[in-house]
Image 1: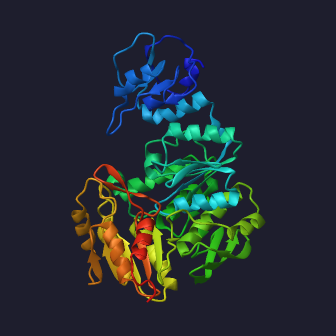
Image 2: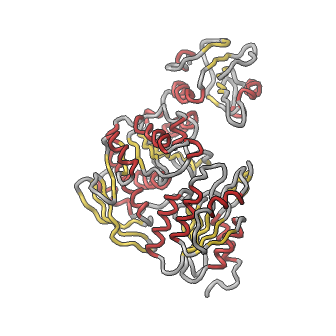
Image 3: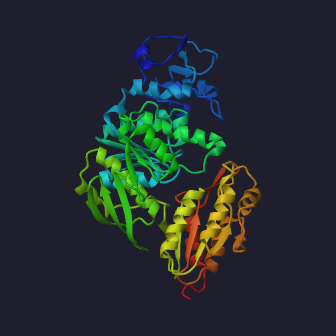
Amino acid sequence: MKIEKLFKDVEYTVLQIVSDEITGKNIEFDSRKIENGDIFIALEGAITDGHEFINKAIENGAKTILVEKEVPLVEGIGYFLVKDLRKKMGIIASNFYDYPQNKLKIVGVTGTNGKTTITYILESILGENKIARIGTVEYKIGEEVIPAPNTTPSSLEIIKICKKAIEKGIKYLVMEVSSHGLDIGRVDMLRFESGIFTNLTLDHLDYHKTMENYFLAKRKLFDLVKDKKNSIINIDDEYGKKYFQYTNGISYSTKEAADIQGKIKRITREGQEVEIKIFDKVYNVNLKLLGRYNLYNLLGAIGAVKILGISDEEIIEKIDKIHGAPGRFQPVKTEADFTIIVDYAHTGDALENILKSINEFKTNRIITVFGCGGDRDKTKRPIMGRIAEKYSDIVVVTSDNPRTEEPNEIIKDIVIGLEKDNHIIEINREKAIEKAVELAQKNDIILIAGKGHENYQIIGREKIHFDDREEAIRAVNNLKNIVR
């Protein structure tokens, strides 16, 4: 490949050139993955600086180095300086790998809550092994599953996923698009067939500072949709109404007239009977996913697959087979005479949604176990406390992922929102789950919220194995008298 092609549409400065041809097969920003002839991208990060690993990359065979600042030059190696390299990496990778993303039909999902579940619904409708999926739980390319360190991976990783998907004959890519990923340009090189907006609630203000900034970051997705009218917008959300005005897209709602509408007719522990209107046709279906918020998730997904040309008949046929994402309203199988549900709810809106849903079919008490993450938006902590207290009979306040914050200080922030005397404080999450199980009576429902699919706790900067589902099973097994 010619140097000019690699840097098409990218400004760059030549620091040292050896050849106008690049012979390597890959681009990497991890020096350990470099092979002979590859391109190494040296990125400045918050914790590590990729420029410190240039020599290691050269030892492993790198022949071309892209940098964000001037560095000592090694003879026989090409060096090129690109300002704002992290943001330009997606274009460079697209040039190098010949824009594989343009051969896929891509659906992006953004919003505070519901993104993960929608991608799983899309997968169920489009075919489990016929799509690539990128999101919080995992990255999946057909049958291949890759651990997900970030909701929206780096632009380079996205391009590589697209390349692999094309090689496997895959047609669709469905992906969660985080506000952070949009803000720093991780998806700037993509063009979406459609973009789905779920909702916008208090979250990530540690990064965005204001809701207006958060709103504008999310809006960037619709500028990347090939036709803004193919944006699928929840108009029951106050910010959704603004996005709808911006896009003139396809609306969905459970409360008012919309292109795609849904109404719950009956709800049980096993699922819900719902009426769905897809443009001008009405259908009655059974949805195994519980709660009004999951009806919203279904409606958003229906809008996207209609744009992809999927018929109403195929959509309705697939709805009965839809399964939720791991750690989203996930029942834990035990021999207890009470129910345990694990959910990822880590915002006030998400916690309220799931607790409202549980209240619709409860026959006894609700016990909620939850905490809040450290080094994240503090303003939502007392709000989540109030919500847990309002919709639960007993609240067990505990630790989540404290990170570098003192867990007791996080709990103090939560407790500010509590007014009733129906809460217990247990800083140790394992013991908090044990306490909830010990307190549970026949037909109670225990909700363990905040971590969902995660199988770790982040304490300091260390990840320690911890799975709410495993801990719940262990706690039940330790009970001497299961049937009461």
